[in-house]
Length: 98
Image (spheres, rainbow, N blue to C red):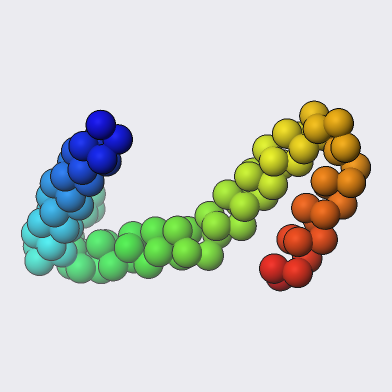
């Protein structure tokens, strides 16, 4: 059952990604009207947006997600009967991974 659910999720995501590529490609090829009556190349708009998204997804977001997960795991470790020992080892392993 889990395999089928994962396959369905992948299919659904593939549809969304394909659609997004199509829409961005179309917008990128157009000249967009500005409020002042001028035009701006769709490529300029899409490329700037894409650069910002890539920056967020690859540089900014991963450390935020890591910090959130560390906080969550630290809280769960504190519930362990030997919390200080386990937390010390957890922190040690985190330092080794850096």
